[in-house]
Length: 121
Image 1 (cartoon, rainbow, N blue to C red):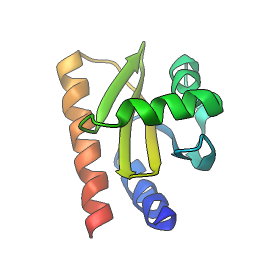
Image 2 (cartoon, rainbow, N blue to C red; image 1 turned 180 degrees about the vertical axis):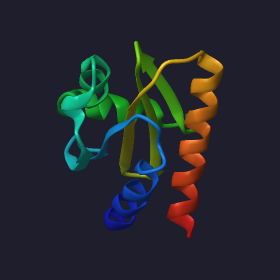
Image 3 (cartoon, helix red, strand yellow; image 1 turned 45 degrees about the horizontal axis):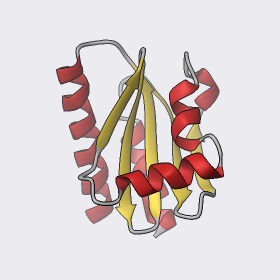
Image 4 (cartoon, rainbow, N blue to C red; image 1 turned 45 degrees about the vertical axis):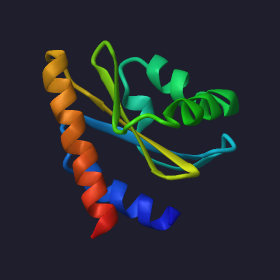
């Protein structure tokens, strides 16, 4: 399943305007895969808050339990779409861009929909 998630992320990341990186992590707090260039993010705070270390990853994973994904986060111009494609994997897609919150939400939904379509197809 991890290979399928990573393949879907590689395809979807090419469609994301301002794409910086993605992170795939497990429920036990380990980073499984990372793609792109997270150091290109203007501000790494959001990345650190969600995937900074084992405790943050577990907290992010636990927070997603019972929530409908994708969830969208923004800190300045850095944005993240959080997905939980399986019961034991969490994904963060990080990109940069400005705009109003409604546009951010719509972009995040499109990213989530594209990812889910790649996972099913």
